[in-house]
Image (cartoon, rainbow over the protein chains, first blue to last red):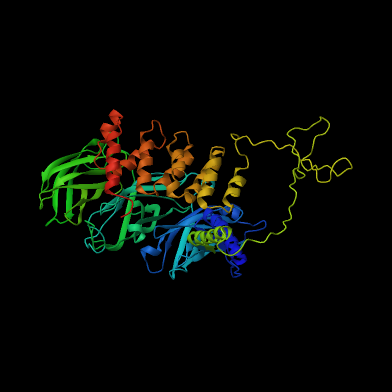
Length: 396
Length: 236
């Protein structure tokens, strides 16, 4: 009986401990011991302490050496002048807390544990998930690191920059942009149409993009542009099994004002209408500043042009003559395509509409965006099981 | 390591059966009578620290560190603490960086930290709100987004804070995002109203936006939004 009493008492202690545990978060982050590395050019203490100067919000991408969507993602941390950092990382659509303190050498090591039931669902325990090493690189505004997923046995890397912040003054990249995400003629690499994005950069270098991918997926993402114009873009797809990920840069490119290569992976899904086999490949994203046209001015610098389509289950390319009118409106001059309905949003630069598919006889939707730097419009239309390219361009 | 609740409940249930059975005499004879020593209940409160709300006399103003030395007339345990002015719940927090830091270094879960930051949010100066908003954005799970969404929907929220919140909401699931932006877009004179409408415009193809602008009737947008969300649930 006495033993039983102690057993019950132990149980009650267990209940108390568990109540305490359930009041805490699912993850526990612990600092780990770091090897004594003498990083050159870095000190976090004394009169040359760099942390008050390099504090700020860092964001970047997480990618393994050999790209795998599930092991990729995005991270964002705020570093303060006391060398503390806090934030999170998203890997394969799952979010994990990041917090700790950098050494005076700009190094930090953390272990992330998750509270979980054991395999027999008998005991609630801490499971070691991640072991992460981070390093701030002196004088570069860079942060990099290695993340070992202890649970699933893979390693991925982190790289990012300090975001342009209030101490850096107003952002030179502030403004509206339109972005085109060109596709591929090979449906194993990317859809045939062009995706698009409406981009806004604020005076504090917050960057936001909303748009549609060339397979019809609507998306939106936000991040912070770095002090040197880099924008880490990460869009998880298919619950983290797919992604659109890569670095874009605001700078004067020969063909636009912002550009970069994005890697797009869409896994196989038999029930999906478009591209059920999935695809993977590079998208050479290109964008330019966008000036909202007035109701009496042209959206592009030409009036006579062509509405051109190809791919998307079309037997052959089809085109119509068009005239661009003030305010972004369009007049259909006729051609291969019938029942062309077109509308334009002056505020965003997005155009959309419908036309009759020349081969199937069905009305299909199209959408895209104007690129004022290259004076073209690019978008996609929905075919039977593929999307095709829509292009608005000046007459040759 | 903790024990699963089911096991604990089972153990307690067994104990209850044994204990009840023992009282009912199921496990042997009567329990032996034992002498039980009882401790008299102390009715007096233990010596306490006295925290007067105001100094008792004009010539006896306690200093912050003041503690009366033990004397013959004053018990040694009795200490006098200075009056502590209650914090004005509406006053701006001057040392906001420290306050945010205190919350972030706490041991509670991330969502609770976010809630604590939201609790003091309105008392932070604008710079503090911007920083707090950035932390809340990282800490607050989607299931508890409503509290943060209120700030985004409020046209009086400082624009620098709205910038952080707009960036945050675009990374949230479609249901949260579109529902919140719908409210922002239809709020008159909201600084982010136009941008919210632009986002909705990209997502919702079949809305006649010119008609919405001219009539001010947002019901067709609501209908189209709900239709879109039904056709495009957040889980694929």
